[in-house]
Image 1 (cartoon, rainbow, N blue to C red):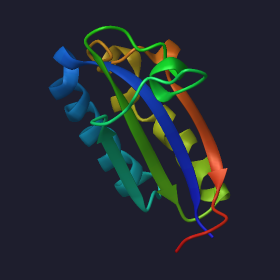
Image 2: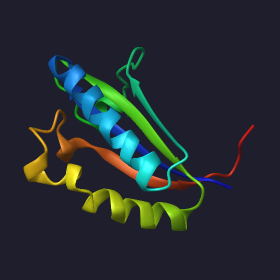
Image 3: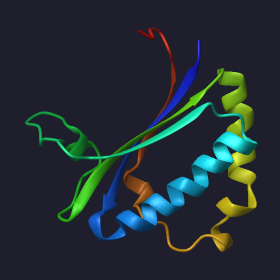
Image 4: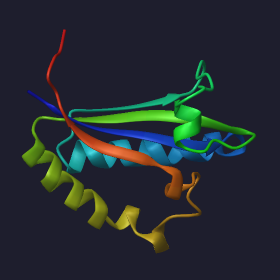
Length: 119
């Protein structure tokens, strides 16, 4: 089965277009150069606050920010591990090649997941 990297990120509403542009660049690299099968980026539309836990609480969402939920699908964990090394070393992903990040990476949640069901 496939392998999935998942991300939950707080993005300032004023930086939505900058985030989309960065995400488009990253998706192209993931798919064309690193072996990813698919990249999905979603902008929070119905993401309620929770009482015990929630997406907004998890990323310490601030006023005028939206939760972005994203995932990258890989054919296997091995391809993902190799692909992420290529991605992180890519010239477009180096700090001097990028303008200011359009999100607060310190509040990003991420992880890799084994697919256990596809229906």
